[in-house]
Length: 180
View 1 (cartoon, rainbow, N blue to C red):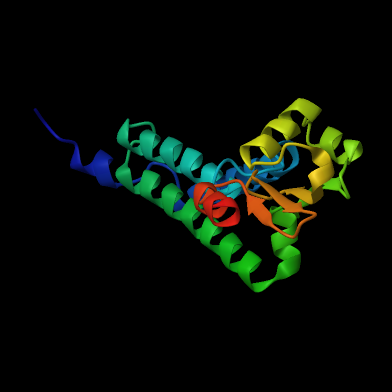
View 2: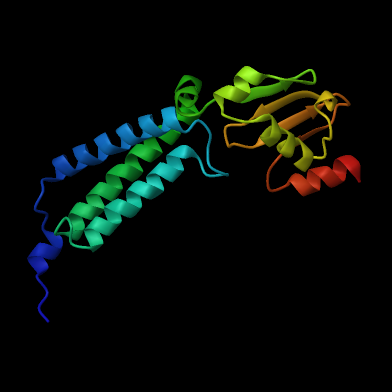
């Protein structure tokens, strides 16, 4: 069993080209996902999901000899991490940049009435919204002053009686404190 140490560590592709390829793919996929997928998946942000998919692919190529060297895979992964960190930092520092990457909460109920145009925009049916409300202990839309679809995909509900809930991991604790 011979190991080709030269092929293992010496890149066949120029490092600036790898950085350019990683940059282009990250920005192109982020833009496409931002337009096509408006909400985050669970508690993972859209950028985090994109980074994980791209890193998995880049790392796989480096491990499976697609690039011919570990250095190329590592440089591409590093490029993706750098862009993700930069975008996180920019969205933390500048609200306008955060608004580009992350949608604002979208109202779907106002004063006990469903906002059909906003529901249509997010492709949420009346039954789906009512299911979300029932999970939060709301039996009738008329009980709700406001309900929003949050950037993470959860639903926040503000009842007319002044209590509020957001669907998430700590939903049960909130429910018990509001109704217990």
